[in-house]
Amino acid sequence: MGHYEKILWAFNEDTLYFQKHAADVSLFSEAEIASARKFHASIPGYSPTPLVSLPRLASELGVGGVYVKDESKRFGLNAFKAVGASYAIAKYLAGRLGMDVSELPCDVLTSSEVRDRLGSVTFATTTDGNHGRAVAWTARMLRQNAVVYMPKGSSKMRYDAIAAEGARVTIRDVNYDESVRLTAEEADRNGWVVVQDTAWPGYEEIPLWIMQGYGAIASEALEQMRGGGHGRPTHVFAQAGVGSLAGAVQGFFRAAFGAGCPKVVVAEASKADCYYRSALAGEGRPIAVTGDMDTLMAGLACGEANTIAFGILRDHASAFVSCPDYVAARGMRMLGNPLAGDPPVCSGESGAVTAGLLSFIAKSGGLSDMKRALGLGKDSVILLFSTEGDTDPERYRSIVWDGELPTCGLLEEGE
Image (cartoon, rainbow, N blue to C red; front, side):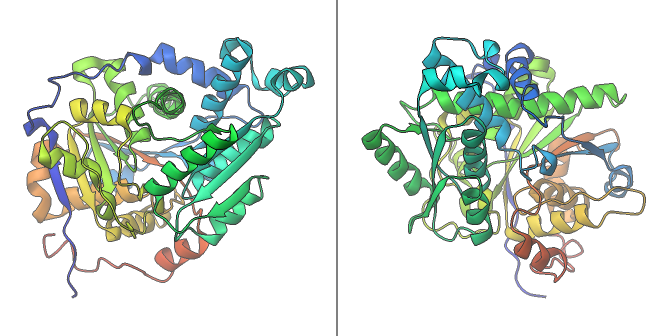
């Protein structure tokens, strides 16, 4: 067997910062997130995405329950990003009209009267694919314009999906973080509105709205668990690129349950593990990752943390894990080819990393310390977010059909 890159982890509860500074999560309360959910419900075709129970997998992993929020079903876009982009753009347009978003459901925002008052607005963003498609889809739905930039190495299929929504799309010869900076500069010159799902000093309002939109996913999942008689999760695994989704999930559960909230585990691509490195450094500030970040998990190939999410995760998350690409590949195969009796979930590269990680923690002797630190056992109820489906079908088939990035023997050897 060949050499495997190790799964690395940092138990945040050992750091000096964990829950000492207590970043404010009040903007992710159930009442705040209800505003986003109300707007989402006004969009044609809205319905909560499925919460999939995998009891056979739970038994195999020795835990009480495994639940997967399947975001491949979101608005027909095969990924979760539209819940953030749509709410943020609606909030921005409401502010431009001097109104509250609660007064502007989708049918009002798309009316000729409102369009005449707003005029033409161009929204600009950088994306690996999913967020850009969500911005372009929202702009088209609301009768506005979108300009989308993609970093080098972006998938042609994801490019085509964005262009099909009517956006002007360009692939730049720079990485994601550098493209974000260039997009902000170009938007400033042209009078465009940046809709980026990361935040930096001086640019935090729209990213906050995006994160509140993402919080609706966690709110839906908790409601579905309660409605199905499953109670609430003891552990939540969330993937992080810039950390917007993970920060929103952590913020929502912390606001809902206080100190008794589920333990949140943050999974990153090892080539872009800024949260893991920041936790190791223990300085309370984000440590950036630079370079090409050539990871299978294109949606997580971000080396600089969202400033809002960073504070929330630094102060409240339980663990940060740096995951090699084979972790995501294993998760894709597990979810797409389940144990008999469990339903399949089509989960893409960035969507499945948490499922793969859970399996390694549960089954690998080499990660037994992490398993003990997290308190994973027969009474644990785990919530996962599959953030995308097969948004790059060729790569999906290469992994699930053809066995790219195998993990044969890895668990037995105690990774």
